[in-house]
Image 1 (tube, helix red, strand yellow):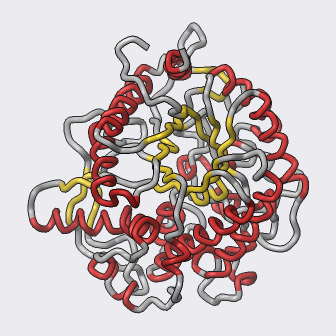
Image 2 (cartoon, rainbow, N blue to C red; image 1 turned 180 degrees about the vertical axis):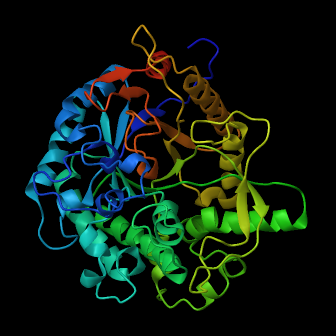
Length: 467
């Protein structure tokens, strides 16, 4: 593509999706309920009362979607596996029809010349593991308790046994920050809890689950193992001491509670300052956990969308007077003088470069090769009279962020792949179907797929890369 920076030989271009966001077939072929089924069916939690019951009907239409990927020319497709489709109750009985679906999808991808990349957990925890009556814990189950990490390892072993011979790249967890903090502290994601120390227990048990899953995948002999983190570039609203201290707390929660154990084998030095008594009184850590969590990885997946501007804020409390884990005296404020996406997110591609370079400077040789496992934008798409979607803002966003990615590579960061988010418009979690991230438009009434201008732009970029 004329005027666009090239990428290293062997660089992987891909596209990504997630199971609950596109599959539908929520009650078919033995799939059990997930926490997102429960959450989305709870009135008032999701925009317009939307659910993932049908979504993009990918469960039935996957050959059509693989054909779109083939035409796009991607090297790899990142999808996620629905745990409740494989092990409907979270542990025990395995559902062969669930395994068969992903086996068919993988074979379809391979026949199209596309490398599968599987994510084992993209937030759809089996409801049976979350429900207190099944958890054996008065405080609730789910990621609050260590048993869920152990069940995750068992599920991982089942999937790896059936697909490990054909899927070369595996991701244990997607964006555990969202699972732990949005799910168990802020309550904006499933399971919708607003808790303190249990949210930090969820952080730790997600990390333990990752470590156990790495062991299971290594035992199965898969080629590449990694994890995907949504790391943030946190910027101070002002240069005041209060705002600079707020950035430290934001960095701790969004970044360091994940990268320090995984990449450095230690807990964040600033965790006590950030979480106070919530972490000092914690009893969920065990000897040997850091060694389990910090096993070597073949790659680190990073999802990046926007910078966050942080200001100091007063400490808030929950109704019972318990401190909430995420309300740690900082707040997000708008970034001035930049374009905002349909999500209200600031578009500042240079911060993408800055994040990656800073990560390399921080961890040096301990930083494994990086794959950008998500990057994209929700825009105010409209269908033109010609039937096309001329999403110029999304094209600009992708071009500018890929240019920023190339700048990070030139600065010495080992980035080996890029997956656009998302192939399809889909169920955007608590926003329902109100936000569209896809490079392919989905008409949710008819399920007709229409490639947008961004699809054709990305296709041209990949074609030029492949000569």
